[in-house]
Image 1 (cartoon, rainbow, N blue to C red):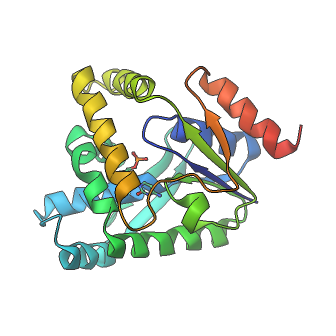
Image 2 (image 1 turned 120 degrees about the vertical axis):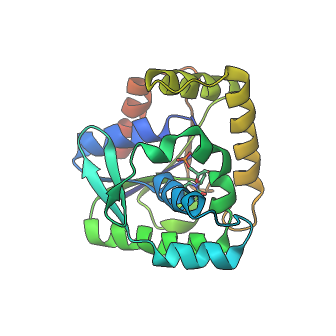
Image 3 (image 1 turned 90 degrees about the vertical axis):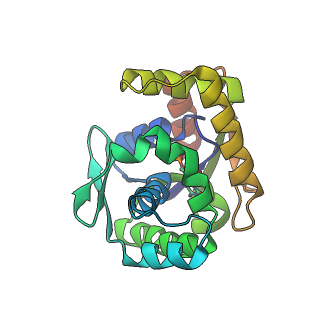
Length: 220
Ligand code: DC
């Protein structure tokens, strides 16, 4: 069974996908974390993020490992180093959409994502193009949305809990900008798959969203 969960930043995808996977006993894969890992490496190597050739060479040379973790959902290891915390830092948020727009980087990562689905049997995969590109044959496709205001609020609270200080307005601007970049890029932009079930999560708690998804999957 393959379950695809897509949507913009802060719509509740990660928390919902992680919990759905846990409840069903399925593997969970956060594909955004993979684009973030390549971004961390590109920043560390001071690569020009507009240089497609350099980005692709970097993506090909990276040894990216995604492990299951009961608490965090996924652990991200890049060339053996755990960068699970680092990929969520504000400097990565600011530029990850540029790296994710690279067709060559996408080709490399989509290949790994399809391989993970093939090897794991049952999987909940979340991202931006899972239902429309990575797993077009997924058994269930969900698209989670929420207003920019609500998404910025959730992200702000999340970051504050981790001790990361950022102004709410700055965060809302950044989320709007990432939405634009993710929706307007040429290669597999963020959009709703024609056969996806759309859930506007604005008025719902995480538990309610998870219940909705599980009840659709079980056919209740
Ligand atoms: O979900 P996230 O915020 O961790 O995603 C990070 C970036 O990666 C974001 O700009 C969207 C992009 N992304 C993508 O283009 N395709 C995916 N399947 C997952 C994420």
